[in-house]
Image (cartoon, rainbow, N blue to C red; front, side, top):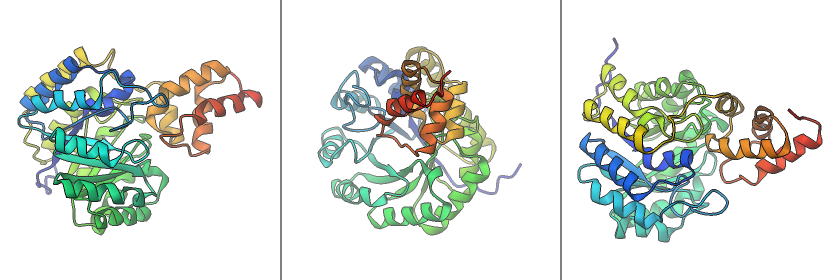
Length: 342
């Protein structure tokens, strides 16, 4: 087997952030404490905490979290004695005040800014704040299938210029195939001199393969969640990805046996059922629509009497992105008025 790339990888675990999408952001203190303790025991390098949409996102529009950002972060910080604690913030939801609170009050080691794939400039101010606070500043481009490899590389170069110490892409709709990932990571890695990040979703069943492709192409930070816990069909499955990466010769420093125990705990205590690729998730991936839209799409389709598949395709045609949840019922009503019903 090809093991030419032996460089150490950083596995970044957003189970306690991205997984919130799957349970309407209702994880409580005991759940957060238990999983953070298990991930820490497995020596997972980085554990990301928060509302599914990031710092400051608890709201009527995308869902109120069960407990506050402060409670989530303080609970996790106590448990993460080895693992670094990370947070994510999208400028549409959070503010510099949220970043200061996470880093100064709660000791977040890493703060990521997430922006749409063509809007790197929206991250400039916040990346500067993170650097001033002394935390590691990262930035990721969401909905990356909506931009060309060249555009993504250009946007990542801008992010580095704004102070990002690691940059990369999120396959937010789970629509990539391995060759798509390889091309994009190659372009980005050739354009920047900081670690490159890849965050996959599993709508087409390709998340582990895509993450391996990213690592083989030069990505040095790979995201994955226990049991794939995340929006829609879920994320890259952490306890599968790590031993596969090890088989390819990518050292992670993670205790695989204890990681399997952490994944078992996650299944038993965090999620009603593990994520699966159902027909709705598949439609999301094929249409290139944010995986987190699964539940609002199902609800809007039921109310309007239209098929979720048709609604996902319509949202894909409109190029709807995260934060535009209000468009979902509107699109459903439009389809119904056009006679596109179940």
